[in-house]
Length: 495
Image 1 (spheres, helix red, strand yellow):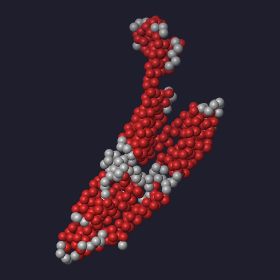
Image 2 (image 1 turned 135 degrees about the vertical axis):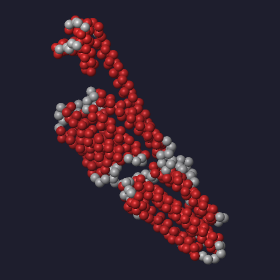
Image 3 (image 1 turned 45 degrees about the vertical axis):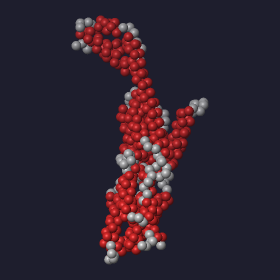
Image 4 (image 1 turned 90 degrees about the horizontal axis):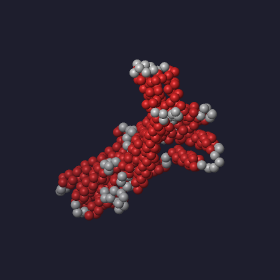
C-alpha cells in the first residue's frame, strides 16, 4: 500500500484550507479522508498527481464548502437543542422547587414529591447538559475539572435535598461535594483563569479570591451544618475578603469602560447583597435562651409527672395491702392498670431515644442518658426538625403508631372506669387524639410537623404526664367505687 509523503500531505492540507474550511475538527477529518482516497487510487496504479486529480473530481469543486456548511448546520441544531434543554429543564425544576417550598410552608401534601422531582431534574438533566455546554464552548479542554464540577454539583444538590427531607447521609453527601469543589474545581478554575488572563491580574488577588470563597463554603456547608467550632470565623472571614476586596476589584475591571449601568452590574450587586445576608444569618448563633426554656419546661413537666407517679404508688400499695371484701379483684385490676401505664410510658421513652439518635450520631446508651437529662442534648441540635422520624415521608412515622397506642390506652381506661362520668370526661380530655378543627392538620402533624427536636420531646413528656394523670384518675375511680368517695387524681395534685 502506497503511503503519502509529508510534502504530499501538506499539499492536500493546503488545498483544503484554501477552500475556506474554517471548522478545525472538520478540516482534520477531511484531510485524513482525502489522503486515504488518494492512497487507494495510487494502489490501483495511478501516480500521486493523477490520483489526487481523480479524487478532487469525484468530490467536486465546491463540495468541501457544502460539507462544512452541512456540518455546521447539524452542529448548530444540536447546540440549539442543548440550549433549549438547559432553559426548559432549568425553568421546570425551579417552578417545581418553588411550588414545593409553598406546599411546605402551607403544610399541603405533595411537597416531598415536588422537591424530589425538582431536584432530580436539576441534578440529572439540567446540570449535566449545562456543564457539557460550557465544556464544549471551551473546546473540550480541562475535562477532569468539568467532571469534578458535575460530581460535586450532583453530590451537593442531593445532599441539600436529603437535608431538607431529613434523609440519612445528607451531611456525608454535602461533605463530599465541598471537598470536590474546594480541592479540585475551584483551584482548577482559578488556575485556568490566571493563565488565560496572561497573568495581567496579580496572583495575590486570585489567591485571596480562592481563599475567601473556600472559607465561606467550608464554614457554611461543613462546620456550620455539622456543628463544628470555627464556622462563624470562617464565614465572616470569607465574606469580608470577597465583598471588600474581590467584588470591588471585579466590578472595576468589568465595568470601568461601561458608559451606562448594565443589567450585569445590577445582578452582581444583588447577588453580592444576598451573599452577605446569607452568610451573616448563618453566622448568627442559635438562640440558647430558647434551648434553655425548652429544657427547663421539660424538667418542670417531669417533676409534675414524678409527683403524680408517687401519688399513684401510694394507691397501688393501698390496693395490694387491702384485706377487705373484693380486695383481690381490685388489686388485680390496679396491677393491670399499672402494667399498661408503665408499658406506654416506656414506649414513649423509646420514641424519645430514637428521636435523639436521629438528631445526631449517638449510641443507644447516650440517647437514653439524654432522656434522663435533657441538658445533655447539644444546643446546636435545637433546630433539628422531628418531621422525618415522627411524620415520615409517606405518613409512616412514629407519631401514627403513638396515636394508635394512646387511643388504645384511653379506651382501656374508659372501660376500667365504667360509669364514673367525671373520671371518663377527664380521661377523654387529656388523652384526646382527635384531629384539630383546622382541616390542614391531623393530630400527628399538629403535634410534630416542623417541630424542633426539644419541642417534640416536650410534647412527648407532656403525653407521659397525661398518662400518669389518666392512670391516677382510673385508680381513684376504683377507689371511689369501693368507698363512695368524691376524691379524684386532680384533687390530690392540686392539694
